[in-house]
Image (cartoon, rainbow, N blue to C red; front, side, top):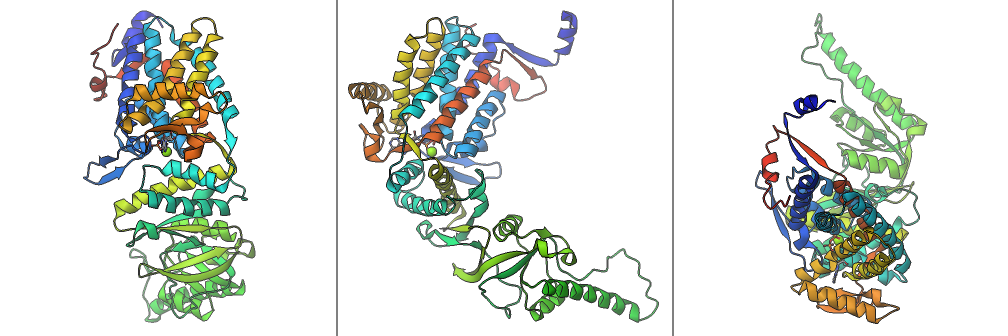
Length: 537
Ligand code: ADP
Ligand code: MG
């Protein structure tokens, strides 16, 4: 494109190039990190999020905070997606990821201001990342007891909820994860197999695990048995109702018998469907939509217990655990579509009758989350989700590392000596990377009301003085002591930190690669982020 065409093409955009683009992007990242840093660690504070319609949510969870924030800046969005990806694959470490990315970016800006080209910074960061990950793997070790695994989960929950609830949730989540430990399946297995059911009333401490899938529903006809030791189940992805006379359908009522004939035919269809199900030996019928009164009595007569208006998620879970295929029309159901349930019963929770179904094709569990208000239950569910996500993964990969900023302090020390072996300007980038890692112990200290510089220096000195096990020395934010994290049970899963370090590096690098930002002028948010104050061009 010749220059003149170029200018025409860009006339509707604001443009930031080179350093200005980087400064603007780093500012956005730092602003976002600023919004979540005070939540990091067990002494982190809660945030109250208020939405447009006045609903409020109190949380200590980094990813919840930033996903709820209405952020428009593209760089900030990039950080948010790094944090969401961390949440998705590791289920923890989201706040750390945002803070670390922002710190990496801030340090790279310093390097660029010193005259180092962004591509050199990128190379240095990649070298540092590779070295950090391999050192991380080297110093990790397998958890050596169930107690230690539970400590990992407690560390995840620290500061999110009260201690007694945290240990209660840890027990529940751990038991649930244990049940799934031999099952094949990806990261979403636990979501699929473990239902979270909120029941109002009661204390969060009354939350518990129920074997099987629990639903806040009862059978449509109470004359059918309330429990069963198992049998054949069919799932209908539709309704079982009388055919309706549509308002706009034209039926010529030529004789008094026409309407009755229509009604009879629709009953006949229902009867056919029920006879078909009965001939297949179906004992339990689950229906997504409604079941008409006529159908209810026919089903009961045929000895089929039925339930209606199941939610999609429950239908899917039930279909999985019983090996049943959902079918739209009852008469289309064939033998192959049927599954087996192994028990069905009722249980009263908070005065409401619930149904519990267990399947033959693998375990399902329901975490019954109690609490007096929706806010309390939501927060308890999030705590359970965290505990569950981490338990599920840590039972499969039980390698652990010290928490409390110990590992980052160790990696920073390690990278500083690694940097010396790299001649050239990359050395400076590796040092910048090392310093960025220390943002974690620094922030943990800050949030515990301690002096961040002292803490980082003390930790580093304490680690250096113990050649063999120094890297286990971190900050216990509850007491302010610098001590062995394995002795205090402040342990993080390797995969969380590993993912966080590589996710942050990747996000920072993708921002560093941007050399040109073109803002569509009609974007009303541009001016807000585009103030050039403090730019040192
Ligand atoms: P994230 O979203 O990054 O997981 P958290 O608020 O959960 O953020 O904080 C996690 C950090 O808190 C980890 O680095 C973990 O090692 C640290 N941590 C947890 N418990 C303690 C503790 N008692 N003392 C010091 N650090 C702790
Ligand atoms: Mg966490």
